Image (cartoon, rainbow, N blue to C red; front, top):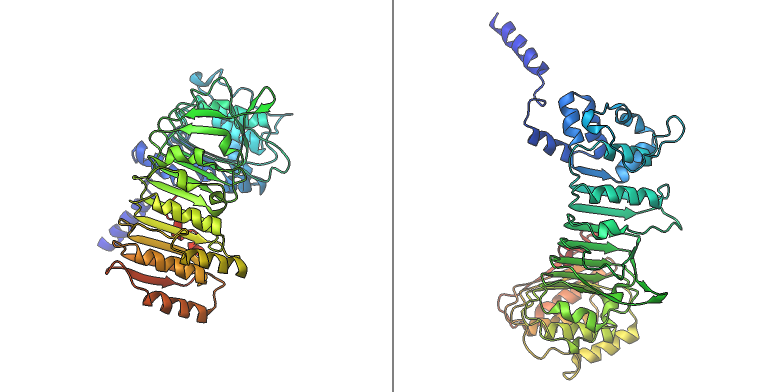
Length: 447
């Protein structure tokens, strides 16, 4: 009899709704862990969950969202069109929600329009992957809505756009609530007469494959922009970054990497080197930098070099000059470029052996960690590590990840040779790792 009562109680307990009574804050956290597609589905559970969904402030219209709609899962969004507007919602519009004949609202654009239209609270984080089916007017409308609804973190990625050209609307550039922004792909036109309010409260900016443009009476020009709260700035495969100068007194982390098409002039980098704590550059940028003109950068603690051509005398010289200008650097990360010419390899080997060349004269007294990725075991690379070992009295760890192209016999020979080199630090340890594709970019640390 007691057992039957226990079984009955268990069945009753399992039938209880244990989630709906949770505090609203917990429900919001639950939705934050779900893709936007699944978060939207919770609205049909109950009135309470519908209210939580309408106040949900983290929306991601990314690959997963696009795929779910394109695969015919847009039926899951039917409730969006049937939600009854309360008195407070009457008269609300999203500049013009574009629905064609009777109901073409089953499209990506219309679904996004309707989700934004019925927001009952601010949209704190917004992720948007722009496809070719979107028009510039769609992007303008969504950005205008976000700029008026408290967006703090914005991620926009342009993909599969073909020859379509998109421009980031000025309302986003001047939005005072944005603190973090990541943009991949469009054009950014900086206005000439209204630069004071651009990125006024932004602390982190990441630009990838962006073309920056500035035009004054039909003539390309340059402009100075003040971003007082900016702490982290990254450029990846961008065009035109030397057309504007950034004044950012709080900037700590600067990254300019991968196939930079414009000349990264010394005058562009020099002002930032006075205060930043972390710097990442790609090898191609080093071709246009004269580090000998830089003042000593006493605050720089982390230096990362992407796709450094050890066989290129100019890149190697600039890298060595940068190290000389950074007496307090604690961590050095290098990702080596894979292709090499035997002739260039021999030339740079002679350069490293020349005490009057780019060889470091003063000790790197604060350097304690060195990470090198895609190590091939070339003569230049080995001489470079030898030099660092002899000039780093505080060095504790040298971690080397081998190139995926390195021969096992070469790897063993290189390791033996490195272990024989004299070291300025008795604590210095050399660790070699096999190549791991999943750890690509490991030497650079967090960007």
